[in-house]
Each structure stands twice: as structure tokens, then as C-alpha cells.
Length: 71
Image 1 (cartoon, helix red, strand yellow):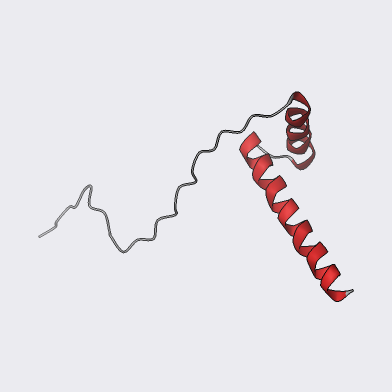
Image 2 (image 1 turned 180 degrees about the vertical axis):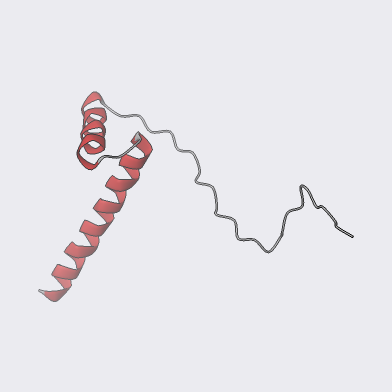
């Protein structure tokens, strides 16, 4: 006997949390910077460029803190 289960969700499956929406207003200069990031790094969207920039800034802060700690 074969049982077909359609629409059944396995509760033990790990689901990624969905990112939440955030509205941010940019100047024309900031929009141009986002466009430059997309072009230079080959990013596909403004969201991807913004996430990239945030992560790069976080890495830079971490490196500067480590350098200050070692000095």
C-alpha cells in the first residue's frame, strides 16, 4: 500500500528566519555609491550591495578594534 502525503510539513525541518523589511531613504549621492558597489563587485541588487557594505564595515571595525587592542 502506498500513501501519498501532500501538503504535510515536517516540523523538525529547520527554517531560515525571513529577513525583516526596513525602509531607508538615501540621497542621490548615496544611491550613486550603491550603484558603484553593484558595478564594481558584480552584485545583483541594491539589497545585496547594502548587505555587502554592512558586512565590510563590520569587518573593518573588528580589524580596527583588534589593532587597537594589540597596540
